[in-house]
Image (cartoon, rainbow, N blue to C red; front, side):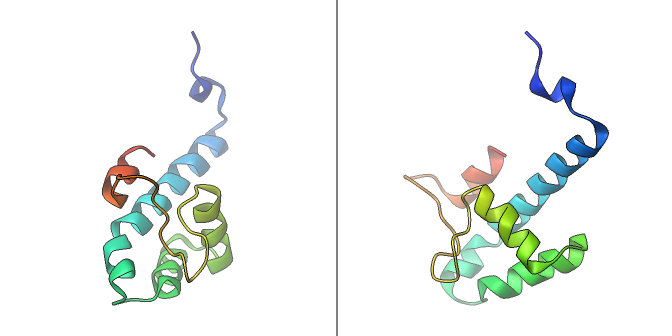
Length: 90
């Protein structure tokens, strides 16, 4: 059976990999965000700066993945899974 990744173009593969890195980076900082030490917007703006994207672009990537909803719900993890465990599934 063929994998979906076999049919990806180089641009699609690069986009998927970059989105995965962005999600992992955000989730790696989730404990700091949830503790209230740093605002989610600050973390998102640093990630946006690093990847040369807009803050809104990063938020869209995170929202599509179901990780970020808004400033009041900065890290969404369902069930008993931790953000670190969730990052491994991406």
